[in-house]
Length: 156
Image (cartoon, rainbow, N blue to C red; front, side):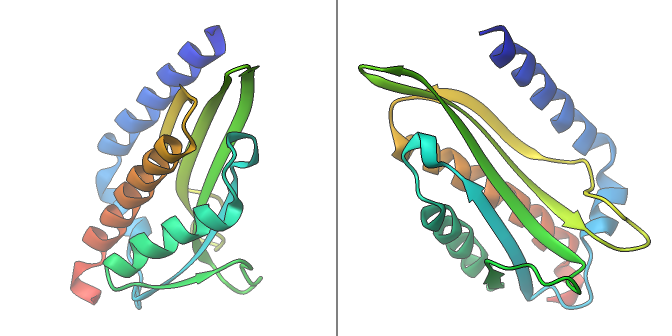
C-alpha cells in the first residue's frame, strides 16, 4: 500500500513537471510530417489484458485524429515513437484483484534528445475489471495524442 501511495505522489509530480515544461515539450513533439506515428504497446498480462488489446487502443486513438499508426517493431532508423506500458501485479486471487500502473510517453532517439522526454501520462490503481483498466489506458493514450496533435497543428 505504501508503494501505491508513493507511486501516486510521483505521478502527480510528473504531471506538474509537464505543465512547467510545456513550451519545450511542445517543441519536442513537433514533427515535419506528424501524420504517421510509430508506437509500441506492452504489458497487461497479469491484468488479463492481451498486448493486442493495448495495440488496438493506441491504433484507434491515433486513427481518431487521422494519424496513420505504425506498430509492433520500431526500426532502428526510427527516431521518434509513442511508447505505452501497462504493468500489473495480482493482489489477491479470490476474487481476482490486481494493482496496475500505466505509463505513456514519447521516446526520441536523436542527437538533440537522446532519451525519452520525461513527461509521462500515468495512472495507478487497483481493480478487478480489465475493461476499467483498458479505459484508463485509453484515456492516457488520448491525452498524449492530443498533446502531439496540438504541438503539430501547423503541420497537419
